[in-house]
Image (cartoon, rainbow, N blue to C red; front, side):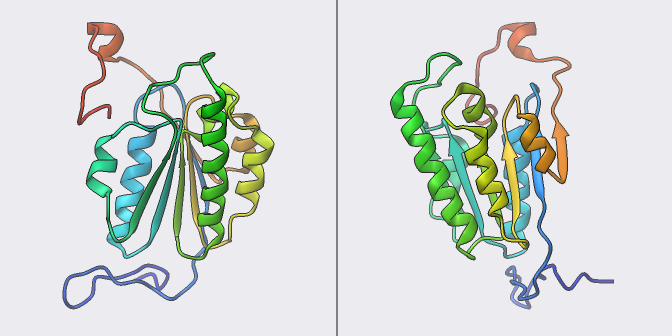
Length: 193
């Protein structure tokens, strides 16, 4: 039985959009294991495959990740970065990082409320809170502003309990083994970024 809230592939093989309203949920992908952003990107691709428009706001990120290079100019997926090209560690936050995170939160909220997107991802927003670039209450305001039909995904390590309380789905990535610590392998293009 087909779900009328889902899009179908059209006769010419392209994804079609549905006009039926569906219920959206809040996802939280957290934990110290690898794969939170990757899971969010997989969901974004799946949604776009059904003709849904996706907005991805990446916090504390400004370097050219593989997904940004591939998705630049994509007709259904918009990726905006709110950070600098350097990797920011805990305790190294500068005012420019805070300013970029606040601009990202403002623009992500605008995307969420615009009616243009069925899926909105706030990538690494948990880390932006943990590092002190954003306050959890201002992020909760964005979560609470989510229209009922929009799927919202929040990613990053150390998600605060207040965000977990608002989530309908929580996935915790747990590191069992990692080649960083086991073999001293550093980040690799196409795998980690």
